[in-house]
Image 1: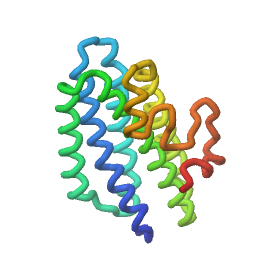
Image 2: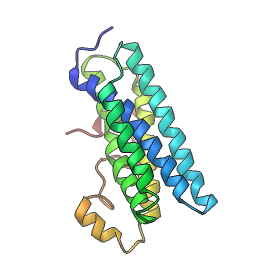
Image 3: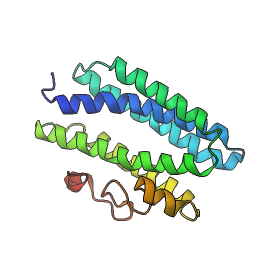
Image 4: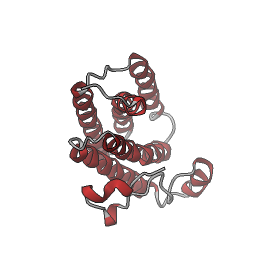
Length: 186
């Protein structure tokens, strides 16, 4: 079956490549941390990003959606650049910007679910819901690390993320999958 939804196709292609960028960034982030215990959750998040990439690819393959060479190149460069930057920008910014990025990624998966629903397709709901929730868990983790930093109020003001999220998913009062249509509506 071919998807007649250009925005969904583009979102799938972009998410597939962006997950690689995120994983590369987390490799650099973990390698920049000296404390072995602090590396553990970053490495776990990296593995979850690789898993998301595999899951998105399965969905793309089900609809014969090609991998975007442009997105692969673009996000490869972005991911490697962020990985390198983690070694020179101090401890706060890698955590802060990872949280900010994850905050936006949450809606990618819920938007995909909305788009699939507009086509009458529900078979991907479980995996898309799980990936959206996992991205929210990542956001919450990163915010928890930086929440007491004196830099947070300044970064919140400049970059619009911190105690205000880019999504409306509340991990403490998580809606079940069948009610998750409320998430990430524009």
